[in-house]
Length: 374
Image (cartoon, rainbow, N blue to C red; front, side, top):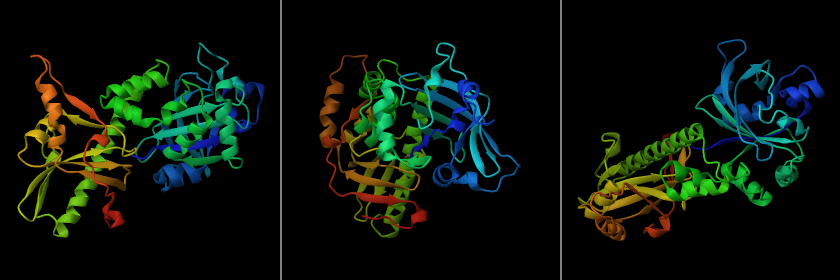
């Protein structure tokens, strides 16, 4: 699923959400971050724009404040609410954590906050990375953001754009934004990939992942898998209407432990099995194959195809196909068979470049888009 990212330039009135600024640099009675409705509502959460059932709609928010600099996350409970026409991240004044009580005193007007919101329909969790010009580890990132966003107060971001900014700024090792632009590593880790775990450990200087972050990331990866299968189901429905299929079955929707996701019957009577591998990221992101899937791909008897769905969103995905992968994977099965008795392998992490994907890129879209394009 696409990530809900936003960038905000902090003002004096935003900073008074922090107790130190409210006391030392009062800028009115506001105790909130102002959130531009053109970003929060129009770009990220359109449901918030629907007529409210109560005069002042408010939504509890599990808030994680990260930074400035390399400071770890501070978890707080706050809320997002609408006052008149304005949306705000509101609640009690925020103090620095006990071990670092002056953490937020370094923030100044013109510093930045990068948001990632979670929640379907309405926001329920937000991670916020604070970027302060007065902190050495943030200086290059602050300069890059200032150059790219010289005017305005709040902007929607996409993952590719954020990755470009981080690449240009090159913040030091351990900076939290390395994690935000490296979701391929996180996706691999939460799906059991050893390389992903090693990558997170390296980027975060050994800090790892909190259990809450792991669960959120795992759920996001699983939702991407479901979205990919739903899009592929619509792809096959269209092929059925066009006469390219005689029949197909969405097998994993019937049997959750099926070693394939779809079974296709071609017009000439050929039967093929399809395994859908989905990612919200790039085609080259590692894909995961269970041992049960490997056994079925190699042993057959039907040809076993892998459909790689990438850049998956709520409404579309790109698709490439690797047909009859059993021959390529047979060597893996030989390795597994040679292991000592009592040792079993559950899954494999595979670079897509090792599989026979053809060069055709299909664009699969939802029924609402009304087309499936080659």
